[in-house]
Length: 478
Image 1 (cartoon, one colour):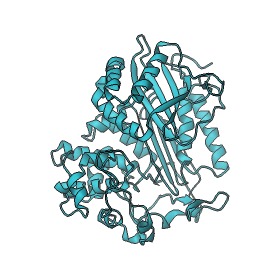
Image 2 (tube, helix red, strand yellow; image 1 turned 90 degrees about the vertical axis):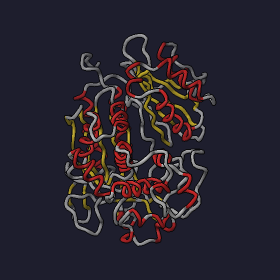
Image 3 (cartoon, helix red, strand yellow; image 1 turned 45 degrees about the vertical axis):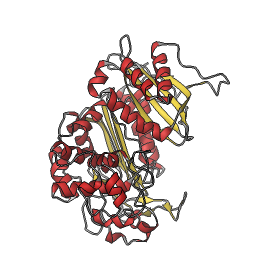
Image 4 (cartoon, helix red, strand yellow; image 1 turned 30 degrees about the vertical axis):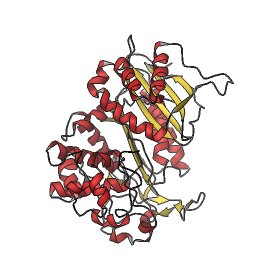
């Protein structure tokens, strides 16, 4: 599965990473802009890199705007930044640009050799305190081949139409893209084929496998049950699953550590998964033999490591405390109340209408560029899990974001994340999905594809850049 950073408690002001100020390319030392916002960005990075967390706490306390603090307090932000720093290590600033409308975008190299996009949003009026930061981790630096002149919404839609027509024409994109201002779509269109075997086109209401976006659904379910007092986030696994196959994990790994991926439980993908007939993987308990008896990969709480297995365990805990199957619980308590009538976990051997098959060039341990794509049916379990593999339409995912914005679903922490701005993604062979809420500009973007990653994420990254150039309604584009 594609590893993603879920943008927790950060303002999702997505902006173009083009026309950068690059000190290295200019053979001069990197320098922050000599402005109030530039100095705040410099202070943020210094505090992030400081081994003393108290320095970052003091910086956030002094520099965050009251509106940002009301959405998410300092200690909650510190917990999120602690996890992100575990993924990145110290940051080396490389490029910076003015995003306009009270925003700066920084590109930094991480201690692990990856690239981190950091989009900073500030109050539009003095003293320009910090509203939030959006993080995006990628393996290669973004291109810098487009000017940063402001554009209108109509121009953005036209550019998006042209981009998708070009990529679909080259068979580089198949899926659905929806861009909404608030709850109202300003662009939505389907491209490519849901079934290459039968020449069935994708439609706006086609259901796509959304991969790890289901982890966000699992987070909502966990928060709901914790709010009802049916589970405690700091209780160990064994409190709810006394027969869990790994006694050490049962005794030491907490529900919160499963959520945060700091528990040390590994993945279910691997040799055992590959050797298991996929029709045997239908219920959450069917996943346990693939990983549960393995030793913990590290001491719980020591670090963060992406964990599909941990989210399967979360799903089993949800089943135990709710008295329902995971699939029934999320249908009754999340999909139903949110109006997500086309979402759910489908079984591959039970015919279902209007579902996109996945097509991949990833097999045999490598990528087969230039070869015909293959149906991904042999890579997928018969039914997905609480870690991923459910299905949804673009319209349903927009409904989910809107319900959470309004405080629905009895998941206040998830609602705060969406109000502040969030990006969630999922991917596997023949599966790629991306949902982004840009809190600063008021847009939600949903990109669903039945091609390999990063098909959807590349489209989302491009749109994110255009949104950053979007002129305010009271200021025409030049």
